[in-house]
Image (cartoon, rainbow, N blue to C red; front, side, top):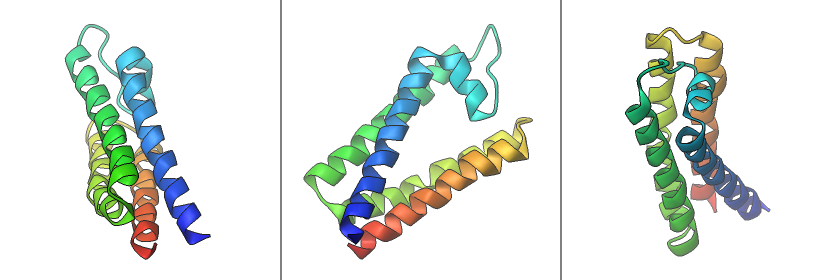
Length: 123
């Protein structure tokens, strides 16, 4: 049962990050607003594309690790990747975003990613 929960959570998180990457590539302004720091109307295009590529690559890498290497590698990956939403929390706070978005989305995501890592280490 623990294995099923650990693997399912890891797959869902990786697919979600892949989705977010796609959203930044195909609907960048809406994605930036959802991130908590709206993009400037006539700027930020390159940065939004970089964010989309980064998130997409992280999602694919997580799925590849889980599929081809195993739970322990994915656990270490999740442990390291949890730094990203923690950083996103600070970015939102430093750039005029709300505390609700910073903590309710980004910090909460970091916590869920750390839970995923712990479950994968336990498998």
